[in-house]
Each structure stands twice: as structure tokens, then as C-alpha cells.
Length: 153
Image (cartoon, rainbow, N blue to C red):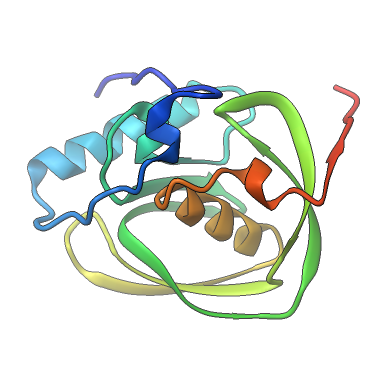
């Protein structure tokens, strides 16, 4: 496994739409492992999309709210409710915003073995799913801001 370099602020990779993964193989599993290792070595990280490490593939890793997930080609297939959230992003250190997100989100994805999975997350996990899957389409959390907030660190 290797630690990957995070992309920050105006890096063009953050605004690119990631490409679908055609085959889940050892190369993809190694990349997911690298992403998870990178996430674990980054302070205050909950999840990471592949374009945040400069890889334009539809891959996300999450280690948050009792979930540890490696997702391939994830997509939102259902949502309900509304919640106000405070969000940060590893690619935009020390910036926090208020957003409106669904309270419950269901995603469909492949796991690291190419098996189809269906996962529903609520509250914080729903926010996380939305945030990370938007990265895969080149949408950053600042695009969803209703206001910027100051958090005491």
C-alpha cells in the first residue's frame, strides 16, 4: 500500500467527472487500499473520492460512523428527508460550510470484489454519501454551500 498525494483547492482533477470502472481487479483493489491508507493518514478524514488523489475513476473509500466501505461505481438510488449539515473536505482544509442534504440516502455500488451492494445511510452517513459521490461528478462541497461557517478548532 502507498500513501497518495491529496489534491487541493483549484486542482483541475477536483472538477473532472470520474470514469466508470469496467473491471474490478487487483489493480482496483490496490488503489482502494492506497486510498484507505491515505485516508487513515490524514487528520479528520471520514472519506475520500479517487479524484481527490488525482485518479479519475469512480471509486470512494469511507471509514466513518461505524462503516468501512470500498465503493466502485457508487450511485444514489434513493433519498428522503431533509437535514441541515456542517461539512468540511480534505481537499479544502479548515473550511466549513452549511448545506442542506437528504436525511436518508441509499446507494448502489460494487464492493472491492465486484459484488453488487445496496447501503442505506442516515444523518451523518447520508451527508457523507452525498459529499463523496458528488466529488465523482466534479462537484465540490463549496458548490452546495448555503453559508460558510467558522468552527473553533
